[in-house]
Length: 433
Image (cartoon, rainbow, N blue to C red; front, top):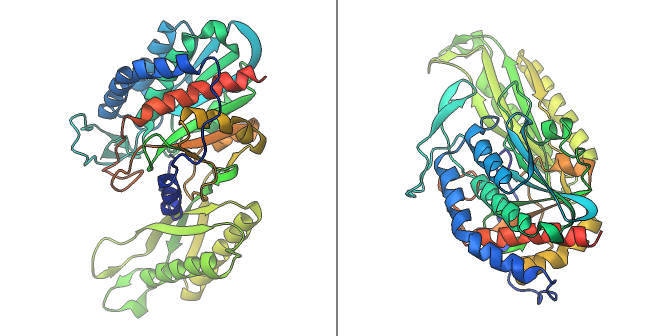
């Protein structure tokens, strides 16, 4: 998942995933269910092998060259029309069914994170790469390796059923979900900009994400599911002085500390927390070179997570006012700069209701369709702004630390369910057209 750190609210969502046990009997099967289930089972060793290969060879955002080549070669072998270099390193495969109908898209993200792996797996990553000017370790710490493998398996299942498909399936393998490098475009916004949903014109899109929970459980909520995400940077400038004589300068640590306190009060005391969840976090603080020198400059960075546009606007205004007024009080200057936001991941309610029986069958009744809000963000939301979209989570066990942890791992048994889910979502949507 994004880019992006899994923030408050994830624990509650994980708890909901953990209770996703056969709430209802799955609906009656469709004529093609048996074939999909059988093929997904047959492909499981292949899907596992792909996932382990991608895990051992992770690539950062906008650098998914090796991954993209493997994906493109696979789609071409399946007889698809394939476009590469979409959104820098993205791959798009188009499977035209044997019967006319609508167009549905399935999406998987391909990028890894600057994380030093500590899983101890035999296929653990030892890769390093350049990230914003630094050499960093690289790891698939968010399950994107499994997403790619699942969608490759789904592509093979559906290609084998081509004559039965009523319409067209577009397979979108997306780079940079975790956010492009500084100064670059990337991810879902760039793919949308380059026409991934218009050539051919897509009617609906589905995506899944590996998440801590019961193995093979499928969970989601209609409407807003994952938060809008705003990144911010605060730049402070004061007056340098010797640490033993702070009155000769401006104490930048005190300025920064007061801003942190003010931000915590904004999210807990100044907005209506009963409406929707809101999180305002300062995650990094940098300033100074030596223990006895008060620095002239201080930089801070963090994230705002919201579900309500009005609350978002209000919090941004309060944060800007707090930075300016606190800085002025100390005699410093301060400015907050906001990055490009990710919108709320908002599941189209009609589409979600339509596809609920599909995921009930795919998971064999192991699902939950009303999980708590999740404060993490997803740039799948950019697709949902253009067309109806449905994003759901796949339980992959309970890895230590959860998503973005150096210990994150996937219980590979879940991937068979993932393949079934994505294939049935496409078939059911198109057959209902």
